[in-house]
Image (cartoon, rainbow, N blue to C red):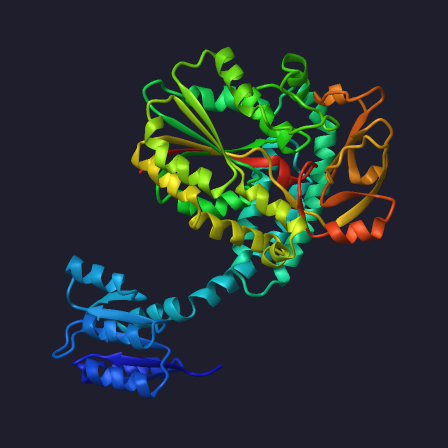
Length: 515
């Protein structure tokens, strides 16, 4: 490893000889100079890894020197050292993107710590993260065998998300491969858990919070006639995606509460999102509102009546005050809502469905460019964050915070990056989704699915006599036996939803207040 080169700028440089010796003994090479002009000459002629800069010097002072250094080398780390504890000096230095700020007198160990923090910060964190995950690996594996309840699965999945985001920061991707193997095993066990318990949940036996209960149990109690609430449903937002955009949201809103809830099956928009807005299971929606509900084999859009479903639910619950419903699919729609949001402050509930994340996941199936931009979960999260930072949605939230809206943020289901094809045979009326199938006669690989023989057991409509549902588990996806290899390759490594996985079923529900 090359020796780290330090440029130390201080008008009392002679007094710092002991510090120089201390650093030299630890492998650092230190060059000293007494003024800002000479420091700039050194930087022009030589390559330094870091600058230690006195704030109070004759001639070109520390802040002025700092400005010139950043002009010459914007990415060169600078540590400001000063006797001055004035807040304005600190603000100016921080605003000029210093790496650290030390108050004189400084001892050698303080300098050493600052150097390590500034130069080796990333490597030290990576090393510690690797060590911690390797130590935790066995505990995670063992804990899977102890999971008995949906609360256990919620806690387990949140722990796994923590480690996934921690491992994201590592340049060494070898541990991510180990993590993904753990997630595969976890999803196999989660599928067995769902297969065992889902039917009883739909009969009301100790269920988790489910899609059709979300509005009545969690959102409705928050509504106040004299306080506007913005209900934001971001279609297809995985919990890990929420975690990466949450720091951006929390610049505008402070989090009041956050909890996971469970999407119903199928984890598809027409089922899960309609369930949220109607407060009904799919079977109940078909029975109560046949004019709005459409099954898989029916022609026409399956999500055209979400506003009607929501109005009907609000009437049943006796909600007071006005409300409005907005579905944002295009950029212009988002921009228009931002302009008009102040007109909605008199409403008890303003509901916004934002479809962009779902569009990204579907585009990956169809567009080579998106496949390049989001080849894996890590890139998918990064793409989501990049979109959010520059989207009308962030500006909408900024406006909502200014107008003192209470924010309720959630989604209808998540998605999973599929990797293994599973053969299926069905009749001509078989549904098209890659993660679930419903038809009269289905032939499938039993070990890859959760099979619902009687749809009403899962509170699902029966499409025809003897029809059933199968849901793909883990990262499997359904491919017809005809031309199997072609379609298996075409859909492999695409983001799909509709089936049974932690990523699709365990999703966020968050309540926030303006800062």
